[in-house]
Amino acid sequence: MTLVSMENLKFKIGNVKNTWVVGSDFRHYDFNQNNIVSSTDAVIDLYNPQATQFIPCMSVSTASGCNVSGYYGTWSYIQEGVYFQDQIKWKRLTIMLGGRQDWFKDKSWSPSYGETDVQKTSYSQKAFTWRAGVIYNFDFGLAPYFSYATSFTPQDATSWSGSAFAPLQGKQMEAGLKYKVPNKNILITASAFHIDEDHYLISDLIHTGYSEDAGRVKSQGFEVSVNANITRDLRVLASYSYTDARFAKSNLTARKYNPYIGEFYGSAVSQEGKSVTQTPRNMFSIFFDYNLPKVWARGFGINWGLRYVGFNYAGNVESFKAPAYVLFDVGTHYDFGEVLPALRGLKAQLAMSNLTNKYYITTCGAGGTCYVGQGRRVYGNLTYNW
Image 1 (cartoon, rainbow, N blue to C red):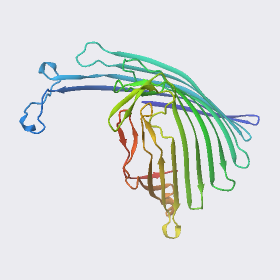
Image 2: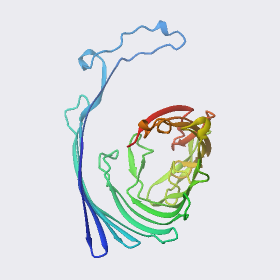
Image 3: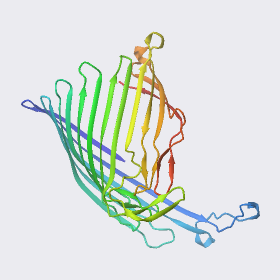
Image 4: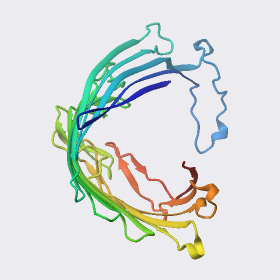
């Protein structure tokens, strides 16, 4: 269940315009789980399976002679917050100030099957976060900006010993430029960012299925994008981003893994300074959208483009790389309003991603488990805007 409320207030003090936004939200999730496994011991001859005869175990009672295991219980997740924001405008200068207070509580009740001891856990977290930003719009189309923000994300996972993790807390600085070419539909943006996150969780390689606190992660990089109408009917969108994400401060160590022999090797080395797993450093995309001539294809348009995703590391100590890949996408769209004014706002789209049905690997885990990317996919949608 999620509830959100918001109020908007505008007022003016002299030549300074203020727009206030005040609101609150509440989230409450309950989850019941009953995972009981019942099995019968049996040895099956793979070369002559019919030679083995047994009756499957269909009871969850230990008195039946079945091997019964599992767990059950309830989990409750509650988060509520109040927030405010003030947008201050004076001539070409805009300042944004905002803050938020969060309260979080997690409760669980989870005994293992056949045990009399009930494992009850309950913990709460709270934090105040804030953000501020400033942008100045010059009359020739250039707009430099700077922003600073803090973040708070509750982490309801627990370690193998049952202890709760501290919330993920971050600090972000971003500076950039936006340039709108005068009298042209061309927008160019460039930005650089620096993010610090404390209590970043990674997979526990010793205790399967659990997480561990990797300490502080530092991410920094830059992004460049262009959104332009080359002609009246041809539009291009292009972007490039570079991200360097590393474990900035960690007391954890790990051994490197060789996926070709399926074994860990060497002595354990520190994770500090190593790249964060499954995070590509380089990403690039470019897409074109063309509205066909109205004389013989009124309302129709086509689009095409490519996506490039660079390599990313597997393992917490840069054991090996998942290779880079390039994907091609195409599509077509139809605007009903171009033919019938009564249907203005109604649009249909048909698209195909991974046109060549390329086989590629997206990421790999520390133990050599890799994930295959999405194959060719065709999808469509019908939208109406008013």
